[in-house]
Length: 69
Image 1 (spheres, rainbow, N blue to C red):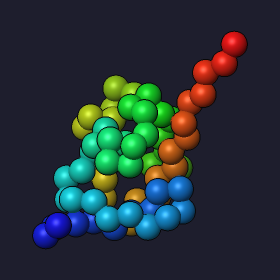
Image 2: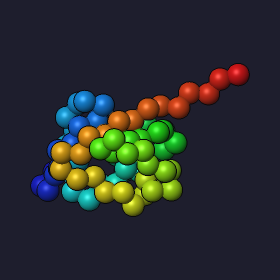
Image 3: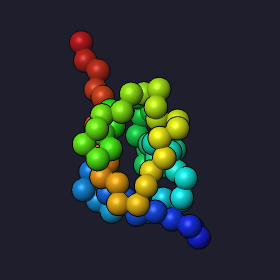
Image 4: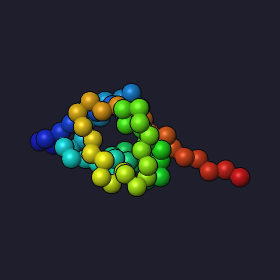
């Protein structure tokens, strides 16, 4: 990857292409697109995943949603 940004996902360093959105990040890392995501302490709405762009040194927390019954 030529132009990359370094961010932290669940406290682990991850490098992604510049311009990577939350939606793409979830896909790359194998998470469900319906996972709960926080960026720099702010929870995002699902509708914002496709246009929220990852920036250098972002702190991302991803939580898998589990169903039950």
